[in-house]
Image (cartoon, rainbow, N blue to C red; front, side, top):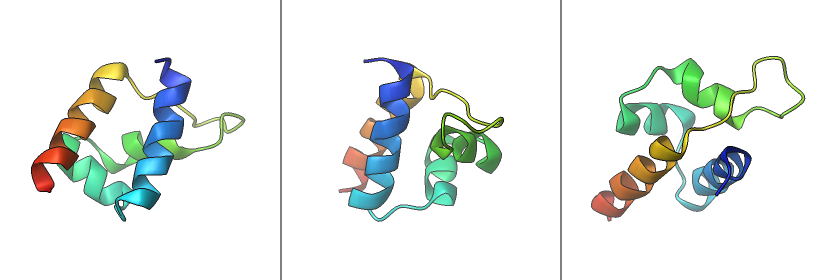
Length: 66
């Protein structure tokens, strides 16, 4: 999976799991701005690609919450 797809998956998880950017930042122990930049439009100057390891860890953390 590419990093761009990771960003799309993150935006999808935000909706499907009713999570906020702050929730995800807390789960991953990352700054709010880092996660927010992953949710931005690719045309934004602040857009950043979500690393694969962050996506994998997020999926584990969400599974643990259930």
